[in-house]
Image (cartoon, rainbow, N blue to C red; front, side):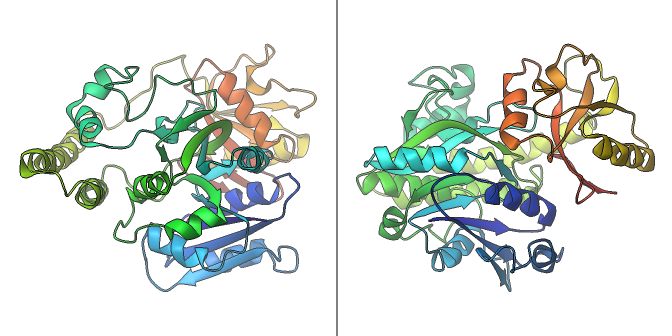
Length: 399
């Protein structure tokens, strides 16, 4: 059995979509899902209870935590209730394919040295997310990242180790750090490492756990099987709190694992982390003032939405576009009749969002289409006719 653990905070629609993809997984194994909600204000638990009745989803376990316990602590609480032979820590703002779990479990079965496994995460526009695989933030690697050397020489094995761009993103490879957005391991490894260090509140705990897995004698791996990661729908990336917590996590990791280094090494790095945190926040605020509406380069946008799906889905989409005042174009098709989706030669329109009927297309097909596209200025949107619901990386719309 595979136990999927999801920590939720005010993202009930994304959790719902994530769970639907989890229960659509295929393989010779059972799947249980444990959702632990960190005191959300959007009635996440009652909403999920209505959407996933216990009679139909007996392997879904919902936990309402009375306070926001942080990512690591919430995962550890759910881990105590997990009964699977494999454990997956999964972010709520992800969408897995029908084959994701089978690919990972098969890899574990053939690689006894595997500690944790991560996957090829795609951004909402189909770009490869560099945090899918990372090197350990040793003092030198941290210096290269903080100083900008890793940005100047991203494909250098010496200077660019943090994001490991010198490795082929479409090949299996050994890595140091597996992203906490999708981190799968055996139950044995989870018990041996005792889960996440709860002194990290929201960032850095995946780096710490990955490092402890390696110290226990295992190897972490990256697999090129794709998933979609909206990347932090519940977090405002330009807020002071985000910057503070992110750089505080870097300090916690450094103090924990490199305290033995002398002051001549540790003090400059700690000062650099603090100063960069401060300047990062200032830069973000200045960027917001100077560029309130930054336009992405690329082809001219011809409409807000391109809807592709069944005739009944397109009828709903027309009503939704009319209600919200969108410009939109519509194409009838499914995975069999229109396998290339919006990349088909017959579709000339270029739209900000491409919304696929998720009852006509599989997640695998949608991600394949976006992954293959050379143009990255359109964003994935998913439409669920039975729920009359449209999900984008910006907002969720209900008809």
